Length: 317
Ligand code: ADP
Ligand code: MG
Image 1 (cartoon, helix red, strand yellow):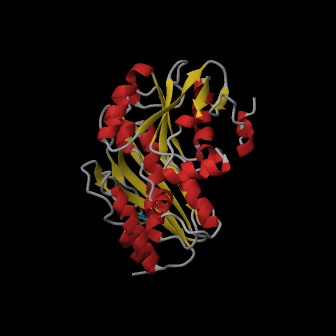
Image 2: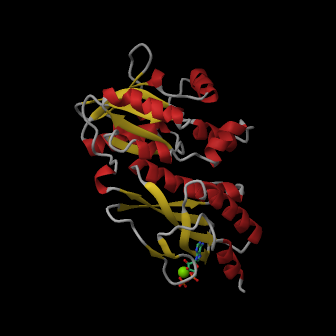
């Protein structure tokens, strides 16, 4: 058995068995059945050591997060997770690293019922690519382009936690464990996304910061939005950091939140808040969709926060 055979062995039984997997890891291809009447929702993300995670990061966190970012894309489409494939590039075979990586990957595969059905293992600079596959009835998929003038703009959870953790890590400072968890073990909002089918008019997951990702909804929907910065949902450490520095760039423009940003008609807000609460996830209404283009962020007192300060020229109007 070669070392790479050993690595493959770590990935032969990841996630629960599923009746729609005719053939999983071990042959030239996996054989998979998409349920009748459903679209296959597919998304792929790559995490590169030194860019998306620290090379000495806990391998179980790398395994967990590499799947979490894909699950977050399925959530943002309103899709049910089903299968994943995994391309792993490693500078050398370190079986302890691979075993821990697989533990983190499995830890997230199980609760979402996701089966790892194949992949590739190669030698090179450390990087991880995960493709996720889910199901959604074609008419129920929540796209980016459906926001309408008058819709409310909402976000789940809190913003800027991962960004603050990263800022502390880069500065060599101690990091609050709850913030560090948000950076390394983000919770994809899969059930919330699924329940927003037929309710949200547009949705995206926040991976590059609220300003950039809401910007994608505005572009795709050909509308503008005004958000009220006082309504941004912030954890106490992020609220403190913002009040000390007045740097709204932290919740608006730091990445890795993996929360959902969505639009919906006002009369649906209570219903959505209720079922979100039953899922243990908060939902905050932060603004409204307007006619026009671009994003306006209102400070308390009514002044406009200059988004250009956080480097998003895209929003210069
Ligand atoms: P091939 O040469 O036909 O591409 P491989 O030797 O790359 O076959 O892979 C053999 C089997 O192991 C395939 O079923 C493949 O999907 C699976 N596999 C390889 N690497 C991984 C991985 N990192 N995760 C999951 N499955 C993997
Ligand atoms: Mg191969």
